[in-house]
Image 1 (cartoon, rainbow, N blue to C red):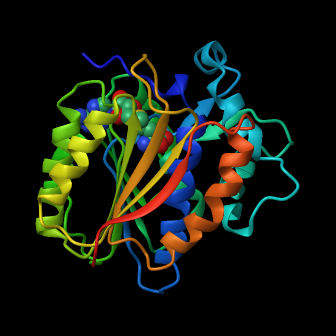
Image 2 (cartoon, rainbow, N blue to C red; image 1 turned 120 degrees about the horizontal axis):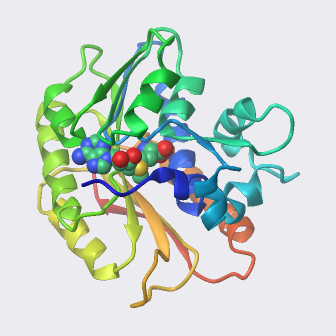
Length: 280
Ligand code: SAM
């Protein structure tokens, strides 16, 4: 049974990192005229009400998007992401948070396509309704990992594949690697972006080792920690692993992370890093 609901966590520091990276990749893909596919294997509900019971219970967004969206010195590179947030909140109060499919919907062009998959019986109908009038999008209820076989390569031969599972099951740490291998076999030039939480550092070390053992080239790892690694319960950091990153992404994140870390973690704990873990 699926118990994870992203509505408890929407807009937290991990979403800020994930959606910043997503928006920079999409912006880079749009530098060329040729259309592309955005494939979101674990799309969630799309839109999250921050004054809703779930978000209010954890208050995580207050230490995430709440800390950055109205800063006076927002770096230029964050503007595509924050414009998507503002688009849902035109009156200056943070009411809704856009999930990954809504960030893409805001940024993509008429000719680009979206394939969105969600398995949860409550979140899927919300996502489908959200996109019912968008002819660029196809929304499916199903297993996200299957889409890496079924939907690749795209006709356009260009695209971003976002893989963002809940890691509710330990097998997710292996399934993401298998899924990426399947996807990469079919679409070796695609940009694959995998989100991960740091709950137990050892799990991430294993996952990275498994990825390195696939022989896939050109892998970048981006991480932002709000606390040092710990054996206690809870997420101390999160990261994005990007295969075939746009050439500017490393420098862009090196520029952004000090600002993001300073605003998201006023206490100064934790760390941030951008590392090419497999060369081109
Ligand atoms: N990508 C979304 C965003 O950034 O706004 C958040 C996604 S959330 C972290 C993970 C989602 O995956 C949940 O909504 C969950 O219901 C869904 N899910 C869990 N297992 C799945 C599977 N095998 N295939 C597709 N979706 C799944």
